[in-house]
Image (tube, rainbow, N blue to C red; front, top):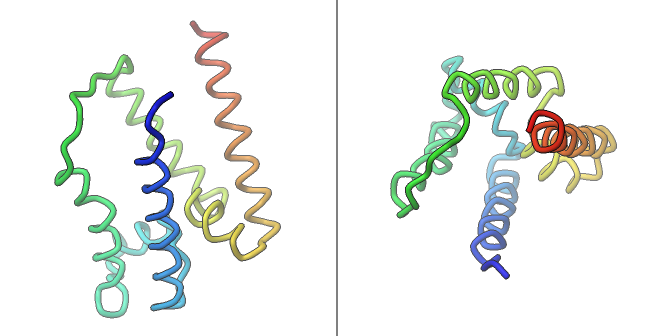
Length: 133
């Protein structure tokens, strides 16, 4: 069995960050919304949005990681990223906003959105592994 503790630790840190953001600023940790406002020039009061995003991105460069290769072409990854961005606009949020914060606040809308995220992911995996393979 794989070592799941790094995954559990990562999930706990995401939950802690979301709880601290809510406690300290009263804001929901919806990454797509934070990112959208940040690229629109809104740094947030005291620059909190910039610091929050930096806290998400900097560990990627600070932590050792294995050499990764992808069987997917770069254009397909770019297209996938654009589709995810479009989906966050259509769904009025991303998995962090709906799945972590919305469900924790007993939002029915977030529950439905998260179920749709999970359903879409399952269908995508099925199609890639069993239909296109």
